[in-house]
Each structure stands twice: as C-alpha cells, then as structure tokens.
Amino acid sequence: MNGRNRVVVTGLGVATPIGLGIGEFWDALLVKRSGIKRIEAFDPAGFGCQIGGELPPFKFGDFIPKTYRKSSKVMARDIVIAVICAYYAVKDAGLATKCIVERGESDGPSNVDSRRFGANIGAGLICADLNELAGAMSLAVDEHRKFSLKNWGAEGMQNLTPLWLLKFLPNMLACHVTIVHDAQAPSNTITCGEASSHLAIGEAFRTIARGDADVCICGGAESKINPMAIARPHLWNRINRDGNDRPESASRPFAADRHGMVPAEGGGLAILESLEHARKRNARIYAELVGFGSSCNTKSWSGRTEDDDSLILAMEKALADAATKPEEIDLVCACGMGAPGADAAEMSCWSRVFGDRLNTIPAMTVRGAVGNNGAGTGAIDFATTVTALYRRTIPPSINTAPPDEKCQLRFVKDEPIDAGVHAAMTVGYAMSGGQNAALLVRRFEE
Image (tube, rainbow, N blue to C red; front, top):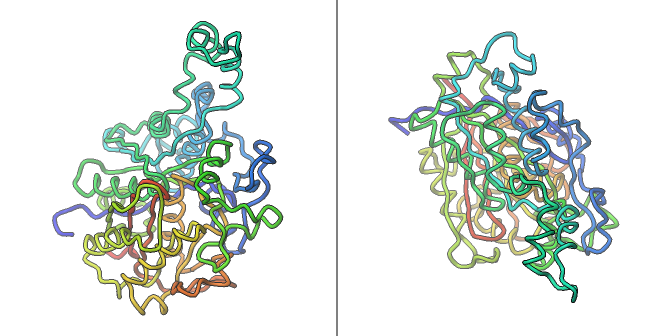
C-alpha cells in the first residue's frame, strides 16, 4: 500500500426496487422490505417468470439540468438509471458539479476540477426498444413475408430516428454521466455482467491511487426488466419460474429451497476521492477503499458450477492488495444470485478463504430484497457494505432461510444489529463470462 494515494468513499447514490437514494434504500433494508412484484413494464404472461424488481416511480427531470432534458430522448432505461445514481452520488458527496450548479442547488461555483474528475461505469447489454424496432421491422418484409435487407434499407430503418443506435451503446451510461457532471479525466466502460460494478470501482480505485485523477464516479447500472433480458436466463434455466404467486419471497440467496435468480433493474454510483482532495474540501468520509482483486473462471464461459473456485483468487488478491489477513475481516457482503450452482460455488469460495471463522462473523446479502440488477448488482452491494461500516449497523438479509446445509455464512435475519465493524469484503461475479472481483473497505482512520 506504500507509495500510492489513499482512496476514500465520500458519496453514494443508488436506484433500487426498494428505494432511490442511499437513505431511502438503507431504511428499506432495515425494515426488510422487498422490491419484487409482478412486472408492470410489459405483459409478462408469456414467461415462466413473471416477477421482477422495478424502480419506484420518478420524474427524470429532477435529476438533470433543464438544458439537458432534450437528451433524454436518446437515453435507454439503463442510461436513465445511471444518471439518477450520479445525481444522488454527487449530492451525497457535497460536490458542486456542473449539473448541481446549473440546477441552482449549490451555494457557490463548482468545487471539483473537471480535468481531474474521472468515471468508470459498468453496463450491460442494453435491450433495444422492441416496440420501436418491431414497427420498423414490419416494413422490411418482402411479398413472402420474409425479412429483406433491401426493404430494410429502403423502408424499415427509415422509421428509426437518426440517433436511434445511441440509446443502446453500453458506453452511453458513462457518456451522459460525464457530460452532465463535466467529468473530463479518464473514463471507462466495463461490460462484464454482474461483475461490472466491482471491476469499475476497482479501476477507479487504481486511477486515483496512481494519481491520474482526484475524484472518480464509479459503479454500474442496468435494467433486466425487458423481454430480451428475461428470455436469456430462461434459456439458461437460471431464472425462478416458481415464485409468481409469492414474489416477495422468490429471490432466495443461499437458501436450501432456492430456485433461480429474479430479474431486476437498478444500480449505484459511488464517489471515490484521494484522501488529500477530500480533506481539502472538508468532505464527510464514509470509509476507505484499501483493496481490489479480480480474476477469471477459465473452466467455463457459460455458467457457475459448484466446483468453480475462480472467485477465490480475486478474494486473495484483494486481501493481499490491502495487506490484510482474513481474520481481520469482520463483515462479508455476499452476492447470492439465488441460482443453485452459482450460490454453491460462492459458498465454497467464502468457506475456503475464511475457514471456520466464517461461522463467527456477520454476513449480509441484498439479493433477497432487490433481485439480480445485472451490471448494477455490485454497486448496490458496495453501497450497502460502505453504509454498514459507516453506520455500525448490519441490516437483516431476507429470504436466506432455511439455509443451505453447506452455507457457513451467518446472516442477520430478524432485526438489524449494532456492530463495530472495522473491515469488510464484498464480492461480485458474472453469471456468464467468468469474471470475478472483490473489494475490501475499512473504517476510515487518520
């Protein structure tokens, strides 16, 4: 850890099925609220899984300057979620960015140098607007009702707006966030499934640690509440088809009777700063980010099996990066997708890294409350971990009982508990593709 800048967390912004903003989200966790219900964004009757986690209603104009509202026409749902998270994050951090100043929500000029303000944001495979696309496709058939490239060029694509494609490029989350808040330092987009947020936060951590930026906004966002995003896990047999009549208990991380993941939307963005920069502006510091590790599963690209131990390497790298031993960790934030094989693999990795001590330290997971948020999954977990550390409170984890007999993770189940946590680890992994990442945070000390 010598020779690099210390990196601290000064702002958290989330958008989840149980609340927008870190305060609303945290309060919902404490009272064990579930955000899973029957899908309302479209008619899900044709799917075996008809439930999911959708964001509460919101007015998008509340999160951007008036001068930028026309740009919302080229924002897919994933982009909108990221922009909402960014607004909450900079407000929470007390940063007077371009957006905050233009909205008249700052007492003075900007307090961040845009040339030293970077971004690393995780994104998923953004689903095209099927209604819009279907209308154009209907005009691209020939006399035999078959798709014709000639007709597509002559008539079909003419019915799409000229900027149509810009709504669905994964890098557009970072694009809009950096424009709205004038973040001109290094920017990157990571598309590694559910591992995206952890990897993006880790890259931002490295950027600040080596001195290439003073501030970074980082995390991820995605919406899996659309037909294409739900069809994929259906085909892979990873989705819960048995919880339509009891949505609030359908997402069951690490439970013995888990039946698969539950799709959702959401994400989070965090503000990371060098300690020196945070001190200069007298910022509130949530915690210090001290370790990051990543790895890849080279056994299979298509999924997680019980013998997949690739996550262990990421966990060990994060511990080594932080010069920390497993016995120094007193809180773990597990991912817990609720898919039998993936949860079994994760349980095994936690056990092998922490040994019998895993039975003695508290654990938490938010998947039971918010479902699988795709590229936004890890950012929500990171925000939960940092908040638990800062508030010295561990929220209950719903739907984790009855526990799998192989699960050594000790979840808080009934009421939140007070805990003097000093160091915590959170992990993330992609359901497909094999990427893994781990982050280690500590209570801030001078």
